[in-house]
Length: 314
Image 1 (cartoon, rainbow, N blue to C red):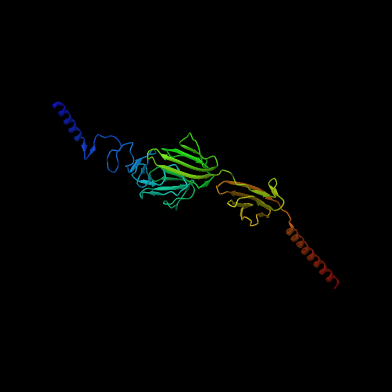
Image 2: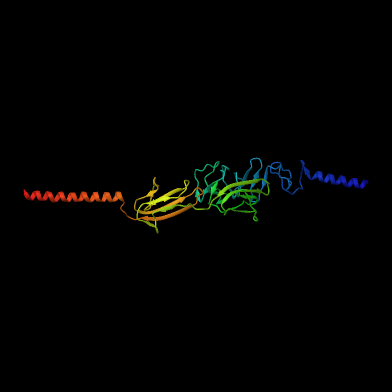
């Protein structure tokens, strides 16, 4: 009995010696970076920051993602995770000492409002000035209706949870990629495995190119006016006539001879290009103008002949 008490007392003294300020000095697991206290891998509800699979941190208070530049303590705070696709504006906060460049579809964005990035396209933030450039984060902003994407590869550490297309729940086998090749209204729910937080994306996918009828065109050419018909009111047109910009006609009719190139874009961003040539022709007004011109020339010639005859008579 006495021996057992002595052993228990010795163990208590050893544990007390290994504990400083209430913290177990022999603990080798994850600790909170603010308090230094051990963190259970199964309980993340009380943690302020959570380490994610891509090496970033998630701030549970601000609900922002934190990315640290290589070989520095400087960070970029983002409202989206690396690789996310969204229809909402994105906010970035970059430490003042960090040199970086924001690219949109491969072109540098010099005057972007980092607190409210909203133009559609693929973005990448590249850290510079450390000898080699390093892409720290990338994301894609898409319109609520688009035909520009056919799939969504979810960010690292995120899994697909639910998928509905036009109100119908869809089954899926790949939790890391969402197939967007089918037209319809998509409601996508996916979650972060380490934070347990769900994310959503609602978008209408339309891959069908715009339709248009060019009345008067046959085999790429026309002998008279060309009427543009059967297009949607949301469609936009870019017209080139002999390589120069040309305004869309109010009466939907193209009348000038020359080589045309029409690019039609629908409200989902799908494009179709039509090329044709209107060859020289005489319409009613042109014919009348031609006859009038010939009459003027004939009258001038007649007057010259008459004037010469008068001179000879005198």
